[in-house]
Length: 256
Image (cartoon, rainbow, N blue to C red):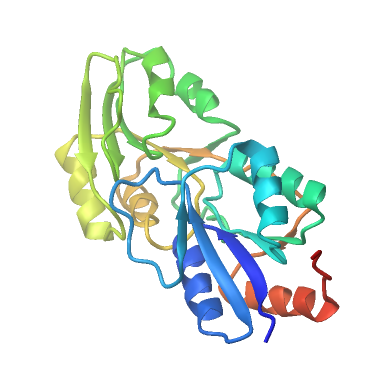
């Protein structure tokens, strides 16, 4: 049987779950691509490709050379460059593209959110007066906060921030979710945090910090997602599976 080839751009819980579901099917040949930024990634259910492609052109070449029938972008909601490269590569190689992106969080009663468009906007929104800031945005963009050295920062990430921030008052906390609300309250209280900076990543694994901030009455600077209406998007793995079957039923003739 001529199996249809699927490349999943991963790094999220949803990507792993989708790979597990698709990898169990006899009619599909699934590869999961990881950027390699996490030092000790979780075990994956299908063959893995690690590392970058060399931008949109390199990804397009990979799709064509490996005769990929479907590209699934299941990267983090804030992996904007990767998603942009995926869109350009899919267009250039005439490969169907599906985006799997979990729903963002919505504010509820008691939340004190200030929405901002970018991480740099969050830096500016902290203001001039020194504050004790919990940076829960991962390690890739933490360096932006060097521009506001008057604040004390508690930076949490899965892997060490390298290079470390140059701001004079910084603590680092290495941890991998999921986190509990009780644990997050203890972190915020223990470090005397008075403002939380978060990306609107969605999902359950890291939502506890938002619930903890609500419980303590703390403000949250929430970095919004960029919107892209040009790519077929699923918000859940089940929805992605239905989209995948729809694309597969339409067929795509491979080159020889």
